[in-house]
Image (cartoon, rainbow, N blue to C red):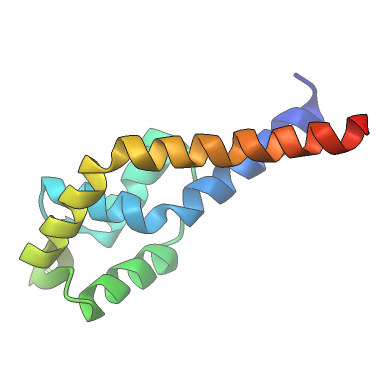
Amino acid sequence: MSDLETEILGRMRSKIFRSHLDVLVLMLLRNGARSCRDIVRFVDTKFGVQVTVGMVYSVLYSFERDDLVKSELRQQKKFFELTDKGQSISKTIRDSYPEISNYSANLFHTLLKEINWQTTS
């Protein structure tokens, strides 16, 4: 793979990841309360993607406004955990994984098919 391909693939992975950050945070909180820094560390360690504390706080505060998470101060750190509503939504997302995955794959497949069709005409 060329340097350009590696760079482009890295950028695409990062964009895709960041566009799904809210889902990732919601699913992470299914395993229990976490601080913002815990989430940032997890993302960096498991996925090698740099997200800022501000990006994660933005997601968490949005969830808090929508009553998907509640926060609690522990040992001078703010921890976030899912509410019943957040648990229900995360379960629905988890249970819908096959449909979500198929939709994403079909989206890219259709796009590539359309591009190939246009270049061969």
